[in-house]
Image (cartoon, rainbow, N blue to C red; front, side, top):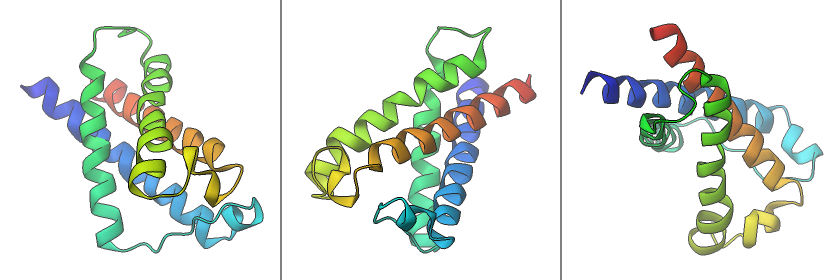
Length: 130
């Protein structure tokens, strides 16, 4: 049980870092410069679900693979939320087209990069917690 709580907490921290990175990219108009129409406001209503989902995705670290190589594991596991965001959330829930391409051609790269930040933050947190 302690391990699951640790995975969840580490994933929550990853979700926070991912969210702050996205907010900063939008706040400094970097996303707009890249032709991506994503610039969220840093509000509790936007931030809290992202932290909770980061924790839920953090539970994937329970998978028994690459435990000795946590950074590689984090990089690989970060592809799971990226795939869900690009091929489920954007097209079917947000109605932003397959892979969110209606938001800009570089949206998939942004999603993969931000989720990689989540994966590395989660993995580093777990590594430091040992």
